[in-house]
Image (cartoon, one colour):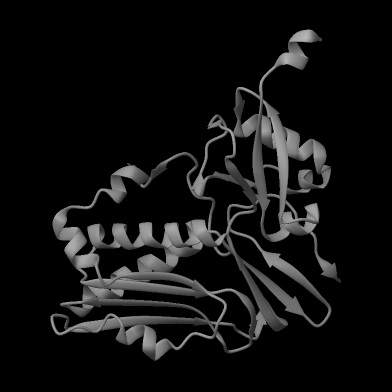
Length: 267
């Protein structure tokens, strides 16, 4: 008993997003943990406090200080841990610090040439309406022969069900960091000059733009390939969630890797 009372404790901040936030009924809570603590011990305490999270089974993901985390990652005083379902539209990303065989630190260490190529890149989250043409023009430069722009917008029908409107939510600081990581990796994979990605959050009416990806390159083939790769990876790893609102209910869209259930309103 005495040892338990004298055990050192740490305090962390736990954030919730998407359907997990709806179940918890709050976007953030403070948590005290016995030290040493890991993401696994913290998650166990979170589930004990909010047992409805068990409805997600094993599909919930964890990030620590805006990076995806493994279950055994140590936690320190004032760390920020986020708990959320798989992002909208994609399979679960790899946990830990490796992405496609490279650490995030390795991906961040671009060469001088990479830095020169990417100085005009931009990665943004906004709650305002997106001007697709203005975004595309930001990557149009004299040395480029082609610009490819993807305009993703809210569609009216999904699996035979009519959508009234969409709501997007983002873990904004982590989302911007993930978008920038995708940009760095795109430069490594494709012969492109510049890439810009802007994603909108909040309520979107049918037909309104949710995401724009603009890629410029000396030749169109590389721009097309990079644009396709970027939207696929965005949906797989960037912490942005989509809620579809129908006349008779609403549902958070989970990724392909999700095996749990989520709360739904309506029938």
